[in-house]
Image (cartoon, rainbow, N blue to C red; front, top):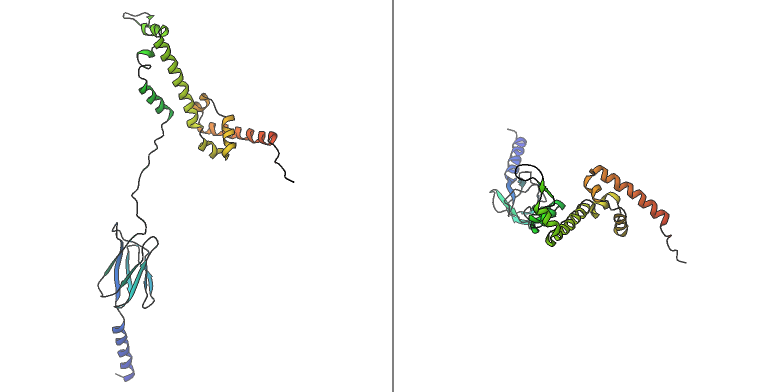
Amino acid sequence: MKPRLFLLLLLLTLKGFGQPKPLEGIVFDKESKERIASVSIHDLTNGIAIYDNLKGEYQIIAADGDILVFSKQNYRSDTIKVQSRAQLAVSMVRLAIQLKEVTVHNTTLTPDQKLEATKNDFTKIYGSLAYGDYLSTPYGGGAGLSIDALWNSISRSGRNASKLRDVIQQDYEQNVIDYRFNREYVAGITGLKDDKLTSFMFRYRPGYYTASTMSDYEFITMIRANLRRFLRSQRTYGLAPLVSK
């Protein structure tokens, strides 16, 4: 073997012995124990910087005594000194506590649910005092007078119950309107805010029949048509802005 070739092989062999073996390991969340991807791993000693893979695994050229810094957004950076060639498992701590998912249910009652709750609170006026049909069907057929309806028409308790039912029905109808024609919904369609939104909703508040029978498309079309009228009236009757001299 020629001396020059021998020296070349010797240098390559020595270089191979001097090259440190890649350090392998994984990175995981200390709390959840789940692996963390895209963690920056920087060897401060030799300047090499890499990222771990999607499985949280990494390989980096590092010698014993090298200082490795593991960092990722929303995690506390961790600094480790390489002491052996064994696989290195690094646990990282979140900067903020990870809250468990919470499902929030809408607790707002619909008008029908409110009416049902009211009926449960006033069971008597919707029970024996609720009879309003004067005609009854007696045993054996034919039509006869309903004793309950007749009594309720002349008794104070029956008349009061009837009035209370009327009040509850009126309240229910207003709840239906408020439920559908609410500020957030109208503001989203019209783009109006504050006093203008209040004025618009007061002026163009729909009736119970409209609110309870119109489809969503018809209801939105009505609001937009009223918005055009409202804006025209604002331009026509609005006061001119004050000019300071």
